[in-house]
Length: 116
Image (tube, rainbow, N blue to C red; front, side):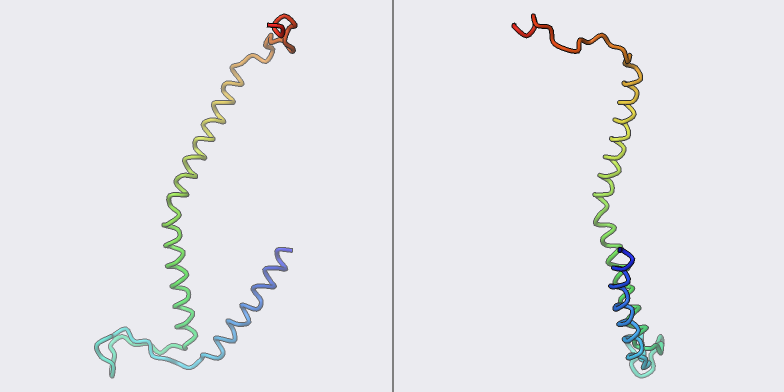
């Protein structure tokens, strides 16, 4: 079911990406020199779709990095809680091992104690 839903979503997205790439094949000049417009020192001829895809990928990387840093407090808290749960589990097992299994506790409360 999950596989079908992935295909249902990703197939139209893939078709749109291919259509975008085919429609924007014309080369554009990507210049990294803001001072010389006639003969830029650092310029590249790239298809427009490559520039668009590179910009989108850069945005995804920057957004993912920002989200990762923003979630740092949550990850730290989760590590601490996991560590505490592990210590409590270890202590519980240790205490269970120390306690004798055949304790002489009464199964019911005697009638005398109930009347008090």
